[in-house]
Length: 117
Image 1 (cartoon, rainbow, N blue to C red):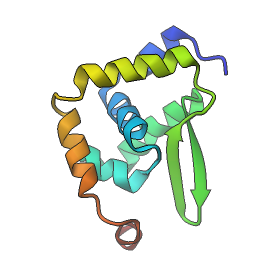
Image 2: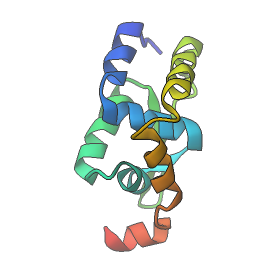
Image 3: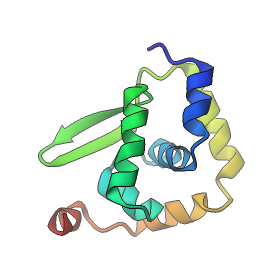
């Protein structure tokens, strides 16, 4: 992976991407349906930001049937993981991050998300 600090900080400068990454860090793996519910954003907007994260290899995907699951890349450099951990500690008790986690805990089941798609 050739991620450099400038590229990572540019990605983290966008609140949608930061919120998505911190949710993935906390939960391990999330589908777009869960992220749209937690972030209260449209699927196209969330998908656009996930594409930027995937393009930079900060996240990777796994397909299972119609679902694509996103998670932090196992190839993420240690320094980048430490930055995400520090960011999480800095914002974990502030809005909108606390609400994101609360909404994620109430996300509809994946089967319900499929029915609404």
